[in-house]
Length: 313
Image (cartoon, rainbow, N blue to C red; front, top):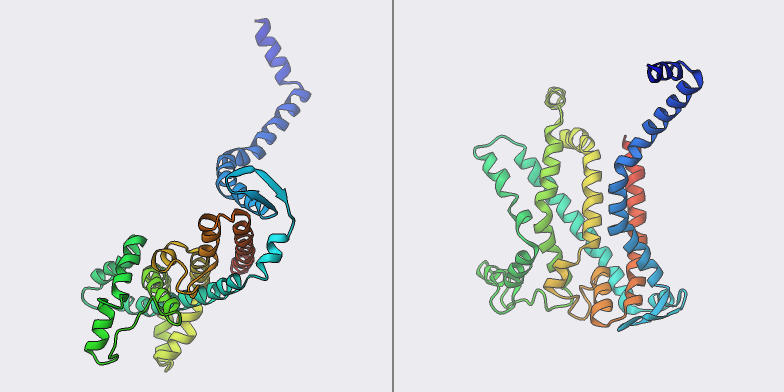
């Protein structure tokens, strides 16, 4: 009886009500941060910490077999990096590799998306078949294309000789002047389905009444594509281009499996050069400096993407 009277008395106390109100407001404000904290900790452990650790490692030189023996050298690795001819070759190849793959995937993916957006018999089957390159494991794709490109028994040389385009076999992966182009073509083939499917989804969101109105106004096929289709796909195109650019810039497995950066470093790109320095030459700290440059370049791209996305709403 006394306890009940005490509770009723405190509940009616303005100071107690104020304290409870502040506590409720505190937990209401803190709840979102508590809920996302596991995700933040997870991302920090597997992404942020290794990245910061890599940047710090690029400022030291340490024994490859005894990591406790290390010496602070500041920016010495970066000075070496910018006088390294192979790094400049890797940087140049990375730009060619990224631009070539992204342009090829987007152009061909857009063409396929436009075709699959039209009504024709068996359209559903073709929409399913287009996904095959995307679902093929990377190692299977790399080994298959190495066989296709083989200078001795490759099916590509056989096909080109049959139609009369070449008279002697071409060493697609052994010739430094065309090796990077050959691997770019493989990556374009592998990534087309993703671009095509995303752009196809964007095409299906365009209102058909816009095309009908334009057709009534006398707009031809090219004008409808230029003034309706392309502007309507602007948002989804930016997302596709940024994602494929980041994935291609960071891609390691396909190039390493097909050429390992050769011949004569003609297919050397920053991720492969980082791996070779770290695990073939055991220059861990120098590899960290190479990867740090790559992180800076990708950070600029990510910042541009965030700013563009914000403007697009």
